Length: 90
Length: 235
Image 1 (tube, rainbow over the protein chains, first blue to last red):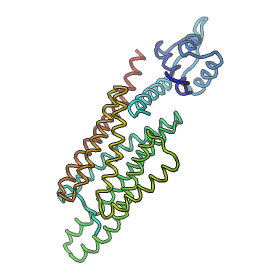
Image 2 (cartoon, helix red, strand yellow; image 1 turned 45 degrees about the vertical axis):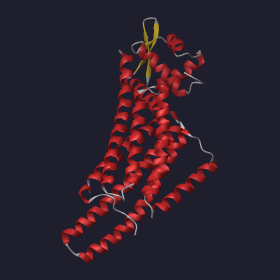
Image 3 (tube, rainbow over the protein chains, first blue to last red; image 1 turned 30 degrees about the vertical axis):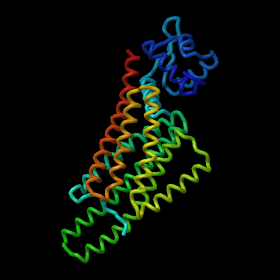
């Protein structure tokens, strides 16, 4: 992606990263896959949890981030938005 | 006398149906662009939504004018009173002149706004263009083809812009969008020559319908493509 990522770009990258891992990912993997700093990751993750787009769960010794149905729907909307942008050259 | 009815009588109602389809397609795109604007807060989305709302509003004005004229004239015919018909036609004409003004104003403002998304305008340019739009609408009252010529130029430039976008990204949806706007542009040429024969109005409307159906297909493809990509990532 060219230029500085917007807030929507970052959220899209995060949700896409989770979906690409089957809807469940470790927070550290999410951080690397979404190309974010630790501080950035914490802020955005808290925001996504608050908006119920993802949820944090603990399985055994590990923490996981899971995408919710609402998160899937939002990711789909973002994909459609990208297609719309490409079609209209926005 | 101002020309208010462009359609041959046998086509009355059918043109309203075609314009209603255009209205629905434009509204659907405008509503989605508004939703995307709320997510991204990008001004391009806002202008795109506004331009489609304006063009949709122009179609709404046209539908309203035609519906009023057609239904009133038909009503008069059923009564069969010549005197009554004359009175109705006069009031219809006043309504049509006002309606036509708004139809033309909304169309040209919408197209200009759409054009401005791609060619950024200075404040002075915007004022100048609005002045020229109003002037062209004023002259269109006597010479109706001036309006279609102006919209032909706007649509031509926008279509070319979409074609350039398609050449750059080779996306199917960009190609469909360029095709739909090119077809809508073509329809304006037929509308320009309605005075030669009213059949040009019918041809123009049918071409315009093809253009708006292509635009609808573009929009559905955009929505479907977004969904498919997401599904494939999910599996």
